[in-house]
Length: 272
Image 1 (spheres, rainbow, N blue to C red):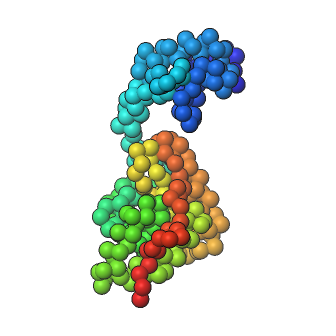
Image 2 (cartoon, rainbow, N blue to C red):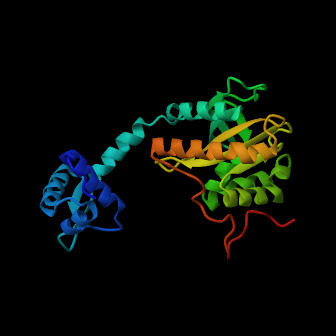
Image 3 (tube, helix red, strand yellow):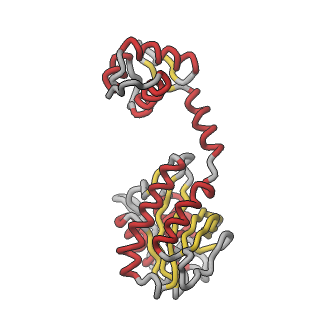
């Protein structure tokens, strides 16, 4: 839809957005129809964008498609992103709203490594975790969110490795399959006394613009976050925070990977 009084710069970005959303090359008429910008203006804008290297003529016709110039812009954006910096205000707000602790975690080997943390100022009990804390992938909400969001090959390799180690096999049993399936079904991962007997937590994954999966977690003492409150109060807060952070960094919240075991594929469980 045309916006009265919009500038050439605004129109140029609307044209680029149109190409970004397209499934293939577009002609001047198609761009004009989708943006509401007059066709003659669209023609001039496309010529400018071609000259700048953001669009190029498509093969076999008079249509255009995105070119390498937009990749340079994307790389500049991605290179400037400090996820920790973007996460801090969201974690602080989440902690204050929940009265608990919030974390951002990334995978480091067989663990999740906390890289940013926040605590509620009014918290009665502090969760004994901070930046640098490591949490087991298979038992923590932080790790289960990550596991449920990555591709099946990566997930299966890590879980199978845990199952070959006697001191870790118990944590990667059939109950883990059920927990991951529940995570995909519900849209969040939960750990109720499994990472630590007195700790309850919920987490969701975020896929950054570069494709990396990180996890956002909120947790605390079991008596502060009983399971009912965790699900009814904290889960919506965590989902909202993850969505806001994903928007800030050009990523996406949620579980984009489909089922853990689809028809014709071996599930991640192993036969007893």
